[in-house]
Length: 285
Ligand SMILES: Nc1ncnc2c1ncn2[C@@H]1O[C@H](COP(=O)(O)OP(=O)(O)O)[C@@H](O)[C@H]1O
Ligand SMILES: [Mg+2]
Image (cartoon, rainbow, N blue to C red; front, top):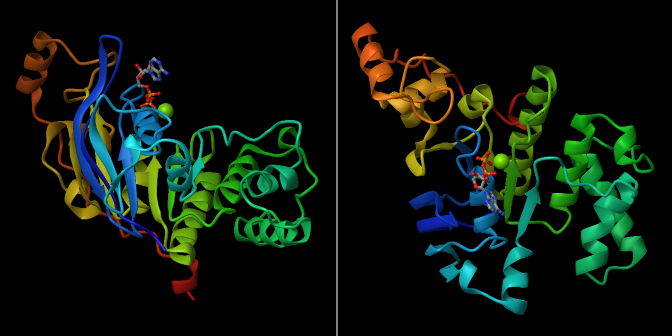
């Protein structure tokens, strides 16, 4: 079952560059949250900070009231085991077949027999629709299958929290739709707390319970899907509406002159009506 995660006042810099500061949000237990933002705004850094692969300069990450980044050694290791992570590229070992990739965390972190491992691997491959692909190498399967394999591997230790870094990047719209359905189904089956980093607007509109947007080093919004999808904040409207008009420019932000010219041309259009949330397959029958 899922657990609540609370980020409080998180700030992270590299040298003189502050990636984001004072990020505070709560990922409700068992719900799906999505984190959006233009490229380079620190979404991946945020995920890595949640599991203390990177440490914040300031702030806390609370799981069951324990500040995760302050942990070391065995206690950190035990806390990290409660997370499953799907990294951006699936992060599979290229020389290992799918079976061995998915079995890897079990061989590393448990003392299960090979027989018990087989049962878990087959169960997880079935959950992601990859039964029969055990002996294929990552290089021999499609990008969508690699994501599924990465997902099966993220599931093997029965995580309470799953972090997805752009699960939909590089996938065509139909593959993305299948993957999104899989994510919603897995959330229902596992009850785990999900955080999905994406810049796919359609994913953001239909998959999560909550949406956050990182922009220029700040978490400009975080809240229930319906609330964010009907926001009147110009940045939120521009990003979710994929408009050229608004504060987000080609590079970083637009200059004052350009913004003034656009203000004269009209404001960022309102967002379209909130679409229904994608329902788990089990509820569709
Ligand atoms: N290990 C690192 N060392 C120095 N700078 C980093 C490191 N990781 C990320 N950054 C910087 O942090 C910023 C945010 O990166 P990232 O989280 O990858 O953005 P996003 O995932 O939103 O595209 C970028 O400017 C990037 O160059
Ligand atoms: Mg990233």
